[in-house]
Image (cartoon, rainbow over all chains, first blue to last red; front, side, top):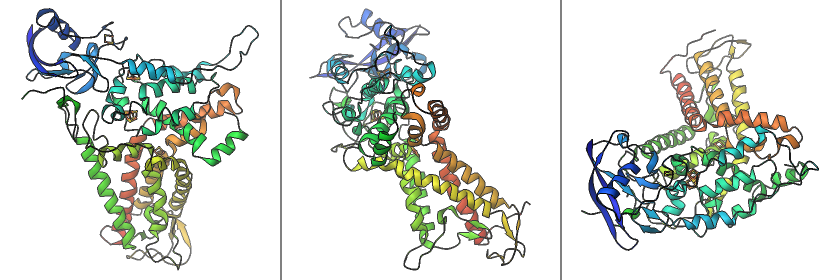
Length: 247
Length: 262
Ligand code: SF4
Ligand code: SF4
Ligand code: FES
Ligand code: FES
């Protein structure tokens, strides 16, 4: 048992501050364990959201020493013992209380993406045929656990508050999961360029740096989508060739 | 001092709760890119010592000097690699962070400004693929320069670097190797381009239902393998271009003597 110091954000949207606590911690504990012990022993009214404690539900997103992370996947032993560990809520979304934010804006964005639109079935029994190698690209994006850490760190949302103009990296990943799928027929380039606001992303890669599922968000989702937008909207030669050769 | 809900909003340049040395990477990028920019401008401007024996500096290749052009011939070429790198997806990240501080690092505050990203002026970054076409051509031209760098004048090279007239023979000097390494690194950088990755196969959704689908897939896999280290190639090729010029320049200035290997 060792006493560790924490500075935890306590408060609401209107008023709040970092409060210091000392928590008895055991070996192998993660930040979420410490928050639970804090809640159990000292701060029963502290709001913390969690679900799986296994890095799979995406509920426990917060910021630890200023960096967006999953609390359940962050070991205390990764931080020096002589300084308090700071735990704050995500900044890109409205605060509910303490460590909990209202992430419902994300579900709204998710609904707006033009849905998956498969081609007509390949076989009379209504099934399709595709190969593993061609579906691998969109499969990477299916790993997304909707933790919204990428949305939180993205400066377009976090710093510039472009929630009305930009859907954020998580939904560019979602859009890419449809758009790059071998069966999908829909063209989302117009949507991505206008409502999706893909041009707001300046590919500075913070989303990739924080993704707990190691999805290469910028390289594999955003840049390929940007290139498709170029094909459809900024490259006269590609448009011409696009008519000659089907995708 | 208590940190309030207002403070955690990171308003203002450099405001953050991060405690690591987040400023190191943008600072290093700014210093190196800045230094390279100054060196390249100087090299292009002075218009001399870019040739020694069969060697030609990559800053001056392909070499042509039309009579109506008042400035250094380097400026007739350099807009191609400059445009290619300035619109490269990796360098964009690097300089948006290091020079525009937009953002300086992840979860670090920015100076207050109206943000447009790549929707307004920077929508021009979308010309990247056109620079790619020219950059590919340039790689072949620089590869040809390496071939020329194996053609040595039989009568030798004067100390100042003029190749003697008359017949040529095969030979390899340290400079030839330097130029060859440079062209390999430039080639890998160019062929690891995100736009190329898209054009050779990334734009295809269903490989099994398109003509040459398998080939497109294989090409895409190949470019992807290089692309995964695009940042590494961006830097190594930048250094190799600079060092190749330095080597040839030092030979031409008589500071070092090129060693003939073969
Ligand atoms: S790469 Fe784009 S989407 Fe990702 S964090 Fe940066 S600006 Fe946001
Ligand atoms: S892409 Fe990664 S960081 Fe973003 S929501 Fe999905 S899992 Fe989280
Ligand atoms: S509690 Fe489910 S991801 Fe942390
Ligand atoms: S993306 Fe870097 S060279 Fe094209």
